[in-house]
Amino acid sequence: MNTQDLARLGQAFLDWLADWHAALPQPDLQTVVRDPRRTAFLIVDVINAFCCIGPLASPRINGIVAPIAKLATAAHAAGVRHFISIQEDHHPEAVEFEAYPPHGIHGTEQSAAAPELKALPFWNEFVVMRKNSISASIGTGLDTWLDAHPEVDTCIVTGDCTDLCVYQLAMHLRLRANAFQQRGVRVIVPADCVATFDTPVDVARQIGALPHDGDLLHRVFLYHLALNRIEVVKRIVVSEVEQVAAASL
Image (cartoon, rainbow, N blue to C red; front, side, top):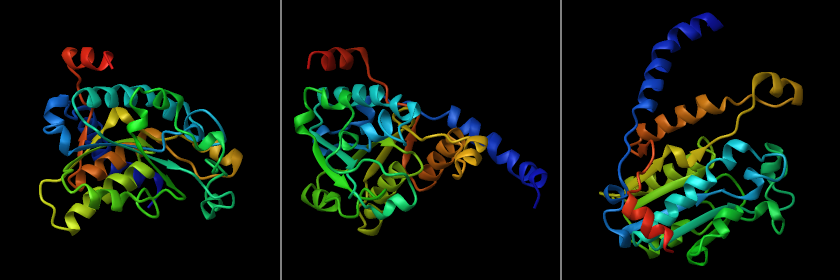
C-alpha cells in the first residue's frame, strides 16, 4: 500500500476524528465530582524532565501545567482529598534509557514535580508514587493504594504523555475495574490537561530518532481511550463560584 492509498483510505477516519475531537463534551466539575469522598485526582509525570529541564522537556507539556494546577485547586475546593502524583524517578542505568535519552534520574532536579504543582497549598496532601518505566502501575504502589481505598469510583487522570504514561495509567484503571467486575467506576481524561511531545519527520531524520506527530497521536490515543469506555472530555468546566472557592485556598 503506497502513501496515496493510505491517505485515501484514512481520510474519512481522519475527518471523523477531527470532528469528534472538536465536539468533545465539556462537563462541569459538579457533574464529574458527584461525591468528593469517592473521587481521586491523578497526575502522571508532570515533572521538570518533561516540562523544562533535559532532553525530553517540551513546551507542549509545560503548557498543561497551569490547567492541571487550576483543575486540581478547584477539585480540592470542591472537597476532593485523594490526590496522587505518579512521577518518573529512574535508576541511573534504567533499561528504559535504551528507548529514550536519560531523564528523570533519581535524586536529580529533573525527577521533581513541576514548581507550579509543588506551590499548591495542598501539595503536602498528595501521595507521591515513583516509577522506573512508562507504566504507572508496575512497581509504584498504585494497586495497593486502590485496594486500600475501595470507595474511590471516580478517577480524573491528567498529565503526560497522552500516548504513553497517560494512556498506560487510564487504561490500567479502566482494565482493573473491568477485570474485577467493579461496575460504576469512572475514568475521566480532560483533553486540555494531557499532552504529548512532537518530533517532526525532518527533525527525526536529523537526530536519528522515530518521528512523532504530537497533534495526530494526541487525538488518536484520546480516541482509543474513549473506545475503551474512558470518558474523554474537552475540559472540565469550573464555575465562577468554584473559582472563588479555589482562590480562597
